Length: 241
Image 1 (cartoon, rainbow, N blue to C red):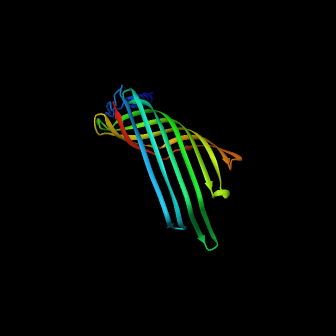
Image 2: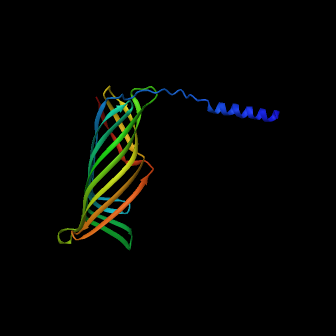
Image 3: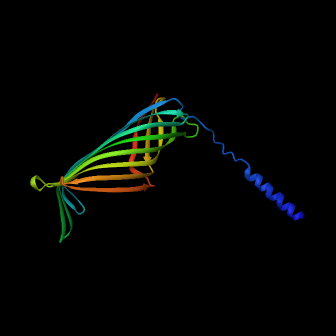
């Protein structure tokens, strides 16, 4: 009986110690206060061209192309360190391949000639953003966005010239749900440099195509992304007021 009482007392003491609150010494600080509006934009442009260029098994490369992307955004802080907003994005991609020879051996070679692709996309995003200062710093901090995005795109592809030309036209729709963490660094009281990257998300996409203005085709797809998406990196300036 005495041993049972000792065991019960030890279990009770251990349970009480386990229920004791552990204080990590973390203090909450306001990085972006309630009532502030913010707006900004990101823009990127890249251009490539080649004339009789050679790379590994590719020879006599004659091609050119560019990619342009513009994305303004804005939002409102409805609580300390919490904001909601919207983002609109336009992107355009153009690729024109005059000639590419692919040599895989003496009896295996291919040629791509007079091939062109043009695509432009529009997207609208609603996001919920939370901020967290780096310690007690009012200059450096982290943020995380939960995004809901709808994309609409149009593209066309052609191959050949004149009467030998073939190709297709397509229209695409995409719905995305994702998470994008980022870093904010204030360079003044009302301006910050921000960078963010998508690391997780789900997308649902459907595409309708018309081949040679006669044949209809379609594709449906869905997927999940649990890795860093380098194509979703955003770097820009944000103004707070």
